[in-house]
Image (tube, rainbow over all chains, first blue to last red; front, side, top):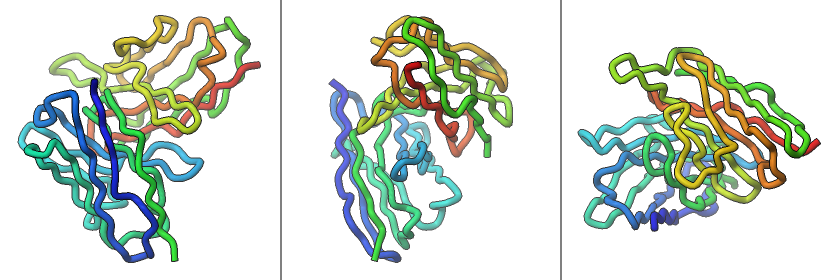
Length: 115
Length: 113
């Protein structure tokens, strides 16, 4: 069974940092593109960042470029999102997603940026 | 960035009737080398993560009921629920994965009339 388990969310002050993790199981993690998608409270879906397996390329939404860094550790089957210089508008549930088509989603981890 | 615009924003349909949601992209999402449209459709129920319904614009994900279908090509796409069931009440999103960022439509809220 495919499972994606996010962790690392929480309350952080503006300007602070968090690192999200996504532990993957039930599939060959190294072979899949992986993305982070967020959803602000009561709002729609917002694509944040992608790690594409072929070539290890990384991509970011303009709103997070220069502040967030996506990475993965295939030995641990884990995807990461390092988030720096956090802003109030980064407050959201962050989902870990398998594949560009979104074939599997985690339950999400809530990040709250507030003083 | 490719902008995905869904219509309508909300929709009320009677049980057993057809529901149709449209999605228009600001740029073609048809990749000519493989003739595939890089569009997916998701269903999100309250308190749950989104669930993939359709990918490549018209390929139903495994386990998704056959009352859900996707169509369209280029810039115009449609999600159709042929006979609405009570459990289909949800918000539906389209997404393009043709180019980064892989943008989503704003969502369509589907309710029972």
